[in-house]
Image 1 (cartoon, rainbow, N blue to C red):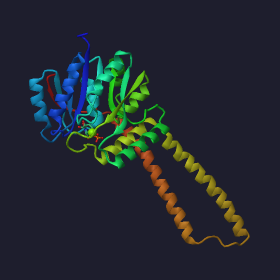
Image 2 (image 1 turned 180 degrees about the vertical axis):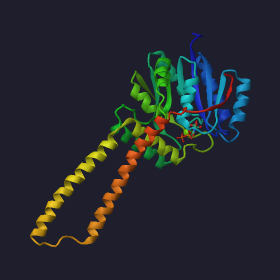
Image 3 (image 1 turned 45 degrees about the vertical axis):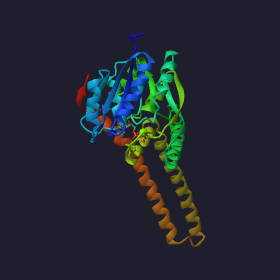
Image 4 (image 1 turned 120 degrees about the horizontal axis):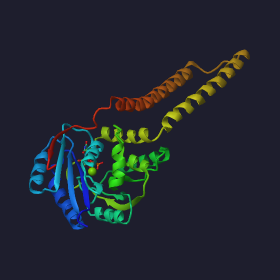
Length: 309
Ligand code: UDP
Ligand code: MG
């Protein structure tokens, strides 16, 4: 059917080493699927030659559109911008670095043709990533799943196909601190996993710094679970109850004139409780911070340049 259109959404941040190869592979896959398609690159404030390469690609390929941010807003917002701009009947989100193999898109499209609203890539294996990254990711996904009210599938990134109907619902959610895979799970609909082996980055280094990764990890938990807040409350109640018991024990010991532990224990206990207190303040701060962001209600991202739109 020629009037069906697919939109491929590709966030780009300092990816000059991978862009050309990545475009050729993705374009070939899209062409072979047989539907009309557009490839939307969102340049997330790259400071290298990415924009020059994107201009060249867009000049020779009218199916390529480029939307460029005024600065780096982060991967989740770049993807959101691409979704805002997409006109397709199905939207596909993929990383530019070829870690998500473009060939898997075809399987996703077949699942969509068979009625899936969402077809998400599930990593059965990750190649070329450090043990630490794999280990922390595996732990994190499991922790998130155990805490979250939305059923967020394990070992799943943002590589997925989303039907237009679902995308329209998604685009109504204008929250600022975005954790797309959680929002996708929260919406429901029929989501089908497509298993794939996550490749090594084709070239260049990860653009997800530790800071960005931690921020995303916190967004996942804070935006999809109130468990940390509840746990703080339970813990506080537990400690209060314990201190009350301890108080009576001390009174009784004092009445019986028994000498109680040295000062050191007191200091230790105090420091520990203080530490925990600050930790809990931090947890509450994480929720408050995000509330403040929502209140300010600034635009999610700022576009500085459009090509082929
Ligand atoms: N990315 C982005 N903005 C950022 C960081 C990353 O648009 O601030 C893009 C990046 O160009 C890539 C995708 O997001 O297409 C995933 O980033 P990366 O491959 O560096 O993350 P990793 O796979 O190492 O987790
Ligand atoms: Mg990557």
